Amino acid sequence: MNIADRINDLYSRFGRLSGITIECHKDLIAIGVNNTVASAEIFLQGAQIARFQRKGESPTLFLSSQCVYKEGQALRGGVPICWPWFGVLQKNNDQITSQYKHLDAASAMSHGFVRLMEWQLDSVDVSSHDLTVLEFSLDLNADKNSAEPFYYKKYWPFVTQLRYRVEIGERLTASFVVSNQGAETFSYTSALHSYFAIDHIKNAIISGFSKTEYIDALDGWKQKTQLEDIAFNKEVDRIYKSAPPKIILSDRNRFITLTSEGSKSTVVWNPWLEKSKHLSQFADDEYQSMVCIETANALDDSVTLAAGEQHALTIAIF
Image (cartoon, rainbow, N blue to C red; front, side, top):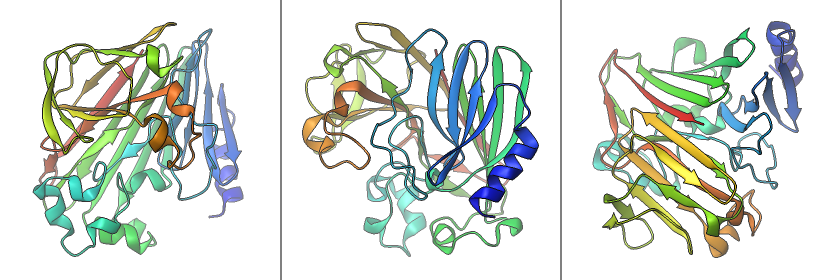
């Protein structure tokens, strides 16, 4: 189905719903949401939430001005879904990498492949004036997916059902559910890779990780302990070994609260100046206006599902 046919299909199913728009950004299709309390935009590629903004407030999520909106290129910002591995495949634990012995792990794309695939929009609920609920799905290696590109099948031979529920209201809630629909047990790591908008990185403070152990990816993957709130004066790339009940991000203008379920690890990342120069779809100075707090199942916090089992990773942002 070409892009025009996909847009026509979406219009026929959802185009008459209050507050819902079907939009095209170059190669990519997005669903626009506007209700009495908030607005948002979610792309079918990767089911990626790109924008969320409460009425009368500035955007909660960061989205780069350099996004190219091309098929097969994840947008830099919003909330990409990282799955079935987080980060560089080679840096995952043996339980994950042992599933890919037939591959050249060094050539595997970072953060897995589902953020590059087009998801199905199954339903939109606008029955409440202050809450809009969207349900997305992606079925991997099921019979109906026989036309799925081969390179995804070589990375993931398991029959798997992915579901993503996004709620737009006073808070942004997203729940990513992985179900093992086949006979073989599999393991994965993942993250809801949230990019938050801030007034300036030097004003950003993240609370909730005091006395928490973390792995410093910039210092030989050494384990360290966070003694106080997180502040920024250089590049940061850390995997915290816990997901606090509540994380608070503040700058000079506001507080953003993040809660999660189904996660025991959290990634905090800012590329700073030198790495920003080498990132795709990212301006050299945009590190100043974003910080990532990623609700994850990373490192030893990997998930293993036997046949018929499922796991949900959920975030709420308010």
